[in-house]
Every structure is written in C-alpha cells, then in structure tokens.
Amino acid sequence: MSVTVVGSIAFDAINTPFGERERALGGSAVHFSLAASFFTEVRPVGPVGDDFGPDEYAVLERHGVVTSDIEHVEGGQTFFWSGKYEWDLNTAHTLDTQLNVFGDFEPKLSDASRDSDLLFLANIQPDLQRDVRAQCAAQLAALDSMNFWIESARDSLIQTIAGVDMVLMNDAELRMLTEEPNLVKAATAVRAMGPRVVIAKQGEYGAALFTEDGFFALPAYPLETVRDPTGAGDSFAGGLMGYLDSQGGGLDDATLRRAMTYGSTLASFWVEEFGCERAERLTREEIDERYEHFKRITAIDSVPTTG
Ligand code: AMP
Image (cartoon, rainbow, N blue to C red):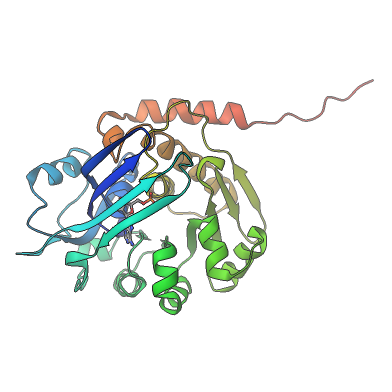
C-alpha cells in the first residue's frame, strides 16, 4: 500500500512567542509525508525551485519518502510562506504567501503515484487538487484546505470536495466554508457536498469526527511545551492517512478512531519543536508509547452498579 499526496513543498519563515526560524523546511505535503512515513510508503507530488537542494531531499529520503514525483523547476523559487503566532497559538497570521513555482504548476503523476491506494489532497489551489484527483485511481481520497482558498477559490473548492471521501479542515474553516456557525450543522453541510467523513481539527482542543452513523471527539494530547504549531494539521493528516493505509484504507468508525488518535499523536510531537524538526529524531516506539497513554487518558468506565 502507499499514499500519494499533493500539496505545498515550502520554505517557511515562522515567528512564535518561543522563537523564530527564517527558512524552515515546510509545506503541507512535507509535513504530511514525514508524518505518514512512520506507517507506510508516501509519494509527495509538487514543484520545487533551484533553492530546494540535497539537504532538503535528504530530510525526506531519511524517512523513506519517495521523492521521484517532486518536480524541479529550473530557474524557479520554491513556495514561500511566512507566518506569525501570538500567545494564542491556535491562530496563524499569514504575513506573506509566495506561490512561486506553484504559479504555473501542472501536476503529472507517475504510474506508481497514480496507483496509490490512498490520496491526500493537502492544502493547495483547489483546481490543482482536482486535477490530481482525476489522475489518481485511489480507493480513498481526502482533502484539506484553508481560509486562503475559501476566500479566493470557493466554487472550485466545493467542486473538489464533491470528488473526495473525506474532508479534514479546521473548525473555523468548516464554519467559514458553509457559513454555518454550528459545527455539527457545518459538518453535515459538508457531508451533503459528497464526502462520507468530515473531521474538524480544533487546534489545542483536539479533533471531532462526523460520519453517517457516528460522532467521536478526541482532546489534543496534553503537552507542557508547545513551541510552534506549524504543520500540526498536516502531521495530523499524515498520521491519520498513513495509519489508514497500513490498515487497508477501511473507513469504519473503529479504524477511524484509531487513525485520529495516531494523527493527534503525530501532531503532538510536531508542535513541540519548530517546523518539522521533531520528526528528525522521532521513532515509532515513541509514537506507540504516546498512543497508549492517549488511550488511558481518554477511557471512561461504566458507572459501577450498587447493590
Ligand atoms: P498547518 O499544518 O495547517 O499548520 O500548515 C502549515 C503549512 O502550510 C506550512 O508549512 C506552509 O508552508 C503551508 N501553507 C501555508 N499557506 C499555504 C497556502 N496558501 N497553500 C498551501 N500551503 C500553505
């Protein structure tokens, strides 16, 4: 099994109350791929410029990420995003977005990427997401997006959503997309667009799952140290989709709950350090240990019977 992901491959300038980085490796497809690599084979699709060199490829390849569908655009510059977080780390303030090589990107998937079982359309122009969906035969396709695209390409985004099985978006963005302040109604409205499953990411408050017959919610893992939330959403999606792929891609509620727990576990490691720095030292053992702890802190017993 393998997962194909299309999304930004980026350099990020990040500023949080706990430090800053001028040029961190980032982008939705990068965070996603590194997180999913702990569970399965991942194939990111996207363009990079001349400034994306061997050091950046090496970070991905050390995790076994297949980089052959990353397209080098000669003379181009890699996507650049600059963001700042206040003490409320839940909200990123975008200072600058430079699409650069994404400006005229036309995705061309290799045969191997077309044949992936799962497809993740990470945060990028919705027309591009749809183009990739049309090229990939995946049995399960999921999508993420953000306010930037809801504001600038809303109709295209709604059309793209109609062609996927699962939507993972921030709660505020689900509300914005549907113009529905109530999250339960917003999730229902998105499911009415086509997808069977909606997952609302709620930052430090966790995530909520909406399916035809179920609801599930998970808090975020309780951390004392959070330095940089960049990539939390994409590492959540990477952990979730990577685990689903390792289980054959089934979308039953029990599997989805475990996948969400893995997603939340990955995101919790991501935010402890800047960009994807924590991924460098992360091991599957640490992930499984935190998963087990998650299980213990979220379990509820039945009320004991008296008598
Ligand atoms: P998140 O997981 O939501 O924190 O996403 C963080 C990543 O999204 C950063 O590494 C950015 O490079 C990337 N990003 C920010 N804005 C955009 C955008 N408009 N399109 C695609 N990727 C973006």
